[in-house]
Length: 182
Image (cartoon, rainbow, N blue to C red; front, side, top):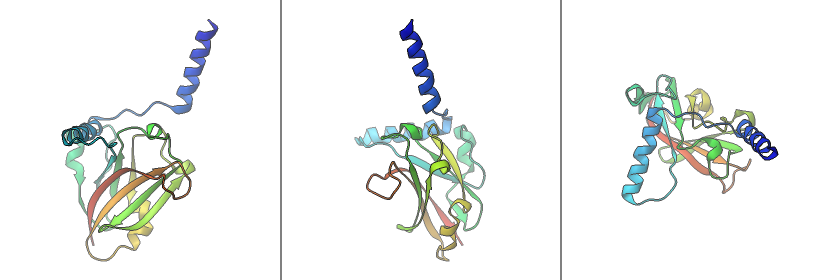
């Protein structure tokens, strides 16, 4: 009986401490089934990274394929309000090494790093999240303000690390691309 009580208490504490991963909608699941199938067919065994998608309206976390695909875009005006949603194959707490202590958003413009913004502490997404949104340009305003005046190919990369300083432990966890017109 003592063991049963101890096991129950341990499971309760673990559940409260680490939380349950948030549910993934149909579109979210579709992204990674497709990626997994493509990797298996090509014989690659590398770990899947997440996908960043863009829209001029909020992107539902639990949306269906029919709901989300029509609102996505890849070309936007420079200061148009754009929503970016990061979809990861696993929740942040399940990443290799566990929940990161630092997340970095990097703007790659025409193949070169242009700007980065770091999140730590209370600004990090929650460990049970496998999907979250940011609003552009607000979230990366300083980077947008220094973009060249011509159309640019923007790749948004999301990097995670257990270290609070820039080092070799950073791992790319999601990426997506769009074109920004002046």
